[in-house]
Amino acid sequence: MKKKNLKKAVKIGIDIDNVISDSYPAYLDKFNIQYKTDIKIHQISEFYYLNKIIEENKNIPGRKIVNFIDELVLDEEFQLNLPPIDDSVRVINNWVSKGYKIHYVTARPVEVREITIKWLEKHGYWVKGAELDLFNSRKGFSSDAEYKADIAVKHKICVFIEDALEIALKMPIPVLLFDRPWNKFKAKKNLIRISSWKEIEDTLPKVLK
Image (cartoon, rainbow, N blue to C red; front, side, top):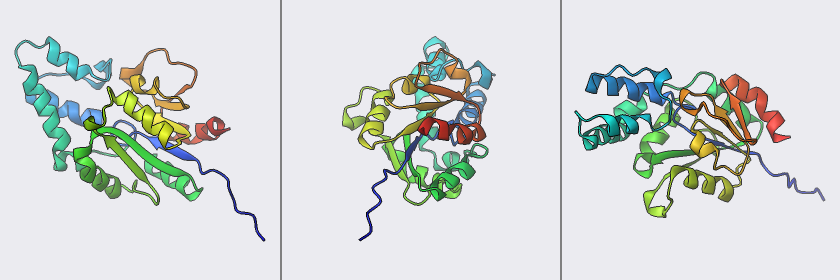
């Protein structure tokens, strides 16, 4: 009688925006056009930089800017046209061929689940066995970071790929932190900075060991 293979599948948690979807530049372009600003991507010194602009800008009501961003989040045409990040779909599909499980965990609201899946399908990310979690404000989480850390533990995710330092610091597992202008701060031991999906591909085996 053959023994069952009880080897635990490797599950990789992957953020979407600014990790596989090149989101921030697209939002920033819309923001600059709408409010006649000239903010460059390298100036985004913290993940919630646009919130800071809202607080400091006395000429535009803060709520108006918040509503503008929220409208983009819910805008299907805008979302579906967000470009994928180079090499990410190739690497993810290669992992799936090796038997790894893919779990997308995003801070996007649950209201855009269908749009998010459409984008994942459009660009080849909605691979066999893929899972997707979106932020649900009714679940009682105090922050995006708390929500993502909870998902990582509950779903036994082995390693997480993220771009927001605040979220990565809360993770109880190894994190591959995509190097971005908004996370240029000292990271703790379980964080490994990476600059491309090729580097992620080369680094993952070392992390899993």
